[in-house]
Length: 297
Image (cartoon, rainbow, N blue to C red; front, side, top):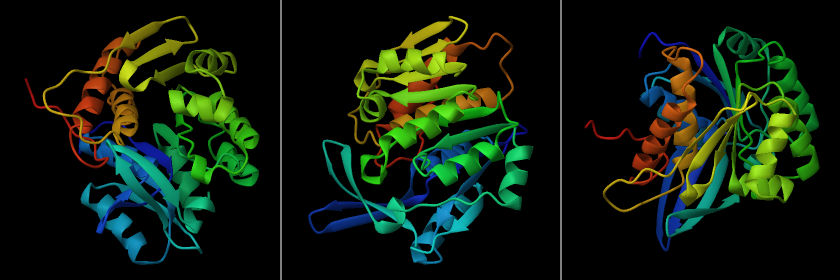
């Protein structure tokens, strides 16, 4: 690991179960886990705060994190470890979540609060914002972290219980954020709107920077001070194999750039965006969600 600053990632850790006829493959996954591991690949010290069960799947998650030297502060779920079952068509996953995933819970006790207080950046992704009690506990845990919070709501329809409550919890955190990421599907699911007006709304409620990801149409960055940058998807040789890790890889690349401490204000958002799109495109040319680095030129 480098001497770069540390990051705490808060959110989901689960088992991705891929089914294709009689073939079944199982891997550790979840957006928060993917971002934490991606940061490890990029040389950034990270710790994941999430939930697993006291079961075989929970140990699979722990072993995966250990293999990338990612710390883990676990809440032990009484329903076991979350599992997302998917049949993939043309690389796009369609998820069905088990009972543990639909009732996920993360505690914020002494160790978690200490890690959050000590971290240089806090990333929150795929968190149950529609659980008011958990959302309040999260907000209380990071209330002194303005300017250090990076958030990606990353909602999943199969785990969403109350859309209005989710938006309220998410926006409470977005108002504290240094960077908020939002995709086209997220904007449609949470707001029933196109991405651009939702991006503008998030800037209005207090987000300092919004990263808007648009799938095949690239991505853009907008700041509260009027800075804007846009990038198309990176064109690389070889076919797109799997898109499931693209958003998490993009977010991890942004966090790593901020945590590296190499940027001199004003932050060069356009350069970071170009690098993130290249990493996302490289990740899409491999199966699974593990962040992949482009070949050196």
